[in-house]
Length: 284
Image 1: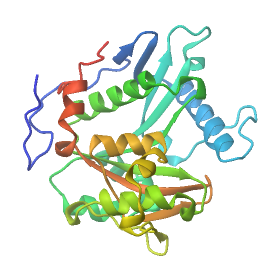
Image 2 (image 1 turned 90 degrees about the horizontal axis):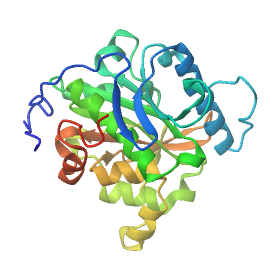
Image 3 (image 1 turned 45 degrees about the vertical axis):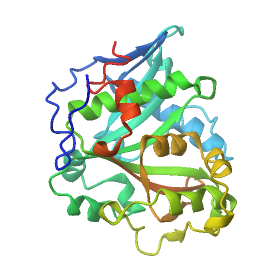
């Protein structure tokens, strides 16, 4: 099945039922992807986020019962990858997660998470006929950082986006550390080769933006720049995403953040065909 695209309304050609509670969105071998069903599963995802974010930022993430939590968790949907072959209750088998925030839900609850770093509201205001989905808090347990886990996460995101008629996916993605110069090659590549066009451009929040174009174009080694990107950013780039021309330092998490804009109508046909226009490639 090929995706029928309406360039003025993105994803509207698809009329698919919403996701029923607890329904599986995909499966590869022993791994399954679906939305969290209850508070225990969300809590488990928050504990995993704390462990990964704090440990990989050089902080102590191993403290028992600590969680990564903010006010957005209460009204976001939480996408989970679960290892069905692991022993124990289901909330102990969660190995990956993504947080999903639809525009209508954000509007009813004080806005998008990324608005603290980037002017996403101005972007949405320029496209009043499109539906936005913010992606965030993505993480995977170290032992599960494989192609199939990433594929399942994207299967879940794509199925969710199709069911909710999403036109544009956005969010912050991070480089480790708080020194942009340490990522001069990949940041410069994004600013020069994958910057958002005027239609999709997003500025940093006032007083927070830092330059990304740090190396002259003739000095950027494209292969080396892409290889140096974190897997999530590299994945967005391959899908056809566009990026901010400024980065923002997140001192709480010890990261350098860029803003990602991925119009559904611009997603590479290769990936649409791979996952299926109706998200059936890895359907359970």
